[in-house]
Length: 179
Image 1 (cartoon, rainbow, N blue to C red):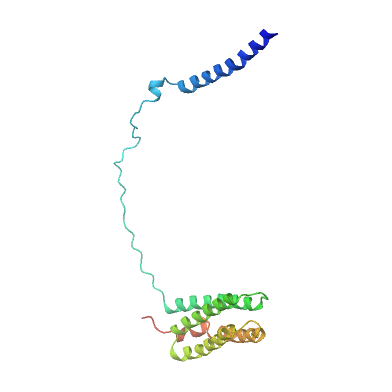
Image 2: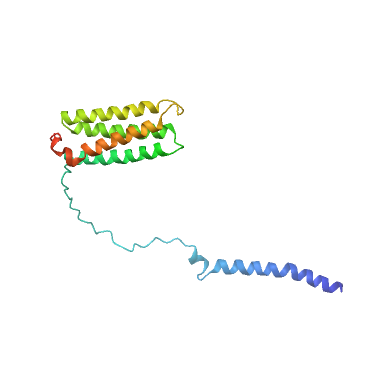
């Protein structure tokens, strides 16, 4: 019985040792011999770098934007900011920062539109800008003091006036000439 345990003990130590040595020998030898496997050789170039592409520059014409294009862009941005501001006023929970940012962006687009119009049409647009600035001034008040219904009705009135009188189709003849 004692002999059996010694054999068992020898088997437990020698078998793993032989397995480890066998794994190391196989991993080091691989498919090639060791000297060939770890020798450094220069990389061979697969392609010859003699090809030089010929680049011909393309001359693009200068983009010529007309005052009508600028006005159309300002009007479409105004309509987006107007929609955002209307949505913000309809929302129950809105921050003062959102409202101020939207109304100031709306006013800046109206001022851009006024700068592209002749003096007569620009004067009419400046009265609308003043109306939006009143709404902006009211937004400076505390939320408890503000009259949202008054602001909404004033926004609707001013917005419909801009849509009715200051679309590109209605003011195309009143645009300043390109400089």
